[in-house]
Every structure is written in C-alpha cells, then in structure tokens.
Length: 460
Image (cartoon, rainbow, N blue to C red):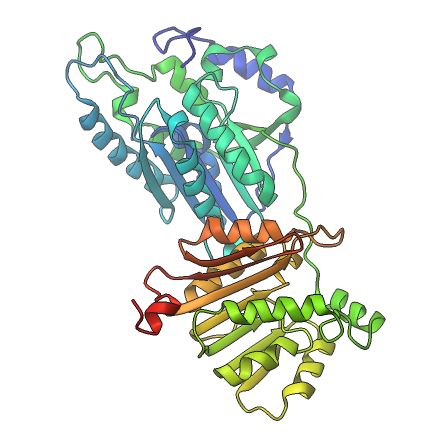
C-alpha cells in the first residue's frame, strides 16, 4: 500500500460514493463474452472487485478463470497469532470457498508468488497469465475479457499485476479493465477517471452472492485475535464499498479490434491474379534455396506421418512424400488444393484437404508438422490455437517445422518474427535448430524427449 493511507483509517464513506455514482452516467459493461479471466494480486481481490461479474458470467454459461498471484501471507505482518505460512494456507481455503460460491465451475489457479514482491517476478507472472489466455479451447476463439486490480489503486502489487495484464492483452487485442479496491478507501471523485468507467449493475441475487462471498474471507473481514497487529483488514466501512449493487471497472487501454486474418476468398483472388506460379516456387532461386535449407534441417530422414499446413501448390509437398509414410496437405484456397491434387494425384501417400487452420485441424498424431509461410496470415488468437493444436497432435519423437518471411506485409495481421516469438512463448519445446537471415527465419521444434539427429543414428 502507498504511504498515504492505512487500512485502519475510516476512509472515504460509502455514502459519498453512492452520491457520486447516482449522479454520473456510467456506460454499461459489455458482458457478451466467450471467456472471463479474473486476475488478483492477493486472495480476496477477485471477490471484492469482480464477484458479481463472475456470478453474471456463470449464470450465462461463460467460462470463468481466476488467477491469484500471491497467497497474501503478509496481510498481517505484525500478527502475534498467525505466521505468514498459516495465513497463506487459510487465505487459499477462503478464496476457494468464495470463488466456488459465485462461479462453481470456475477454474481457480494459485501462482504462489511472494506477497509484496511481485515486482521481482514479473516475467513469471506474465508467462502464467499468457498461458491462461492462450490455452487451446474453442471458447477462447472469440471475445475474452481480463479484469485485474486497477493500475492506479495505490498498492504496488496491484500496479504490477495491472501492468503485466496490459502487456499480455495489448498484442492479443484482449480487453483489459481494472477494478478498484483501495481507491474506494483513499480516493475521492477527482481521483478516478470517470470517462473510462464501466458499470455492471447487479441483481439482488448477484449482490447477495457477492456479500456471502466476501464473508468467506474471515482472515480479512474479522480480527484474527484481540491483540494489536491482528485487526481486521477490511472493516465494515471498507466492506460497504463492495456490498453495493454495482461493480465499477476502468478501461486500462483503449478497446480495439484484433486485426482480421486472411480468409480463403483472399487467397482465391490472389491465385486468380497470379495464375501461373503465384508465389514463385518454381521460378525463383530464393524459393528453391529456402526449400533446400528446410528439407536439410529436418532431424530425421524418414518423416513418418506428415501434416503440412498451407500446402499452396504442392511444390514442398512433393518433396516430403518420398520421405514419408503419409502426408496430409491442407490449404484454405480451392485453387491451391486443386493444383496440389493435380501435382500429386499419382501418389497414394498424399491426402489433400481444403480447410483452414486451426479450425479444420485433422485428427490423429503426426511425426512432422510443417507450418511454412502461413502463421502470419492468422489472427493472434488463431495462431495461438494452431500452436496448441500442433503440440497436442505431435508424436513424442516428432518435430514442428516453422519457416516465415521476415519483411512486413501490409495485408498480414502478423509478421514472421511475431509468429516465431509465439512459438517460443507458448509451448515448452526444445529448439532443435534456428536459421535466421535477413529475409526469413526457419526453426525446428521438438518435445523435450525427442532425439537429436546424431542420437537417431546412434552416434551419441
């Protein structure tokens, strides 16, 4: 907490805030969602700030995920009756009860980072929150909302969590709002950015659920003992801010739409405009050289079962086939699929499918998954899902081959470097090979247990 206020102070009365809220025309919070993620710096933040929102989402069948960064073990640093370890244990139990009450099917995760020292664990916190929003599931394909402690709440841990959430949300186009906790205690009307406020009006059932959820945190709402140092952190005046019939959130960044991915119609039109050799696969030395580098980079001569995402006209597909048991080649464009089929209709090992990734991902396990010059056509969320689909369907000794043009293209939602950054961030693969030059980046990834080329040959 900042030095300017204490939890023992009476604070700003709730009657003052009620008058302010009644006279202000606050925009309603948009709750048309596919996923709600509630992030807390400490146990009880999520209940105080967003229990009503969690209850609303649950009532509407919207999945709820709750991430609690620390165990709040330093809530009573001078307590003569409870050690930090005892408080951490109790506060986890309290949070489980509160979240279960408002979101019975919610996914609750404790990160166990040190209370008061989140600034020392920013990278870990960011990775954990990114993993939550990027996990593979159809529900995450659409509208995601992250709510977390407000960045100007006056508590260092709250600010750190807000900044980390902003860093995760911005490149993914995810909405991020902050819920005040301590600002209701120390602030006044001039300290809040009302133009960025969004209100969730709670029904009587939601208000009742939230009050009951707050009562699930007795280590904070009651004194731990009559002794000095064990005073209630959330006295009645403080609790009254959260027992009102509305929850207030503040936009932490401007709401924006995620850039659209390129669809099949875009590629069909491209092929129509460039009929003979649209990508220069068969006419450019650049493409021939890149293809040779990719083929030489594969860790095994025998590729097993291959999935090629974005096969285009099948030039690379034809190189895979002699080294494979089977090849599933897929592309969104009807013209590309027809040309690949004509090129390889004599080869029984090759199946050519028209479909988009990740939505039409084929069933089964693959030994080699090729994502070449395709990742930057996708939205960030679709790319994340593609990466997770690849991880789920990759065999234990398999590999994922990714190769992408590095220069920016105006129509593409992402760059090649964006794609490879995501590959490194989302999945705990080993990087078998990295080839990076001015024009393209080529990398081969494999599960931790996969053998190297030398190990496969028995050389080591």
